[in-house]
Amino acid sequence: MSQHIISPEITFHTEHSDADFKSRVRKTTILLSVITIIELGIGLLIYNIHKGENPNHTLVLMFKGAVCILTLAKAYYIVSVFMHLGDEIRNMIMTIVVPLMLFIWFIFAFIYDGNSYKNLRNTYDKHFQESAVEKQEKKAEAPAAKPGGKE
Image (tube, rainbow, N blue to C red; front, side):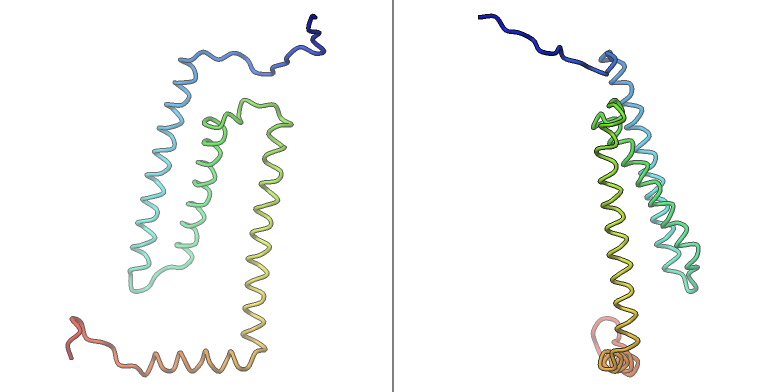
């Protein structure tokens, strides 16, 4: 019996040399390391801003946004180079990216819905308002503990 090949294997990749791939991985690793160091620096800035007497909330929000953008850039490079998605055809990339975007939308929708629930609960639930106000008043009235635990 002879085997009949119905369709030959089709590949859309161009052949890469091993040295080319190693060079690409090395460059990506260095780039990811630099981005991580920048993120750590921004994290220390945010920490020091929060420690200050008058923290600038707008500045902290901008720094947190920058960290989110840098994290997305790192995720792109990891998926593109180390998971080889950058070498795939467009349809394969869309098969992975579109559901991911829907998942991100899903997360934002739940955060928005949870915030709406919290605001409505605080506005209309009188029992919750009273218990929250009592807790805040108790915190304000409680004497501050001395350092070292001695009185």
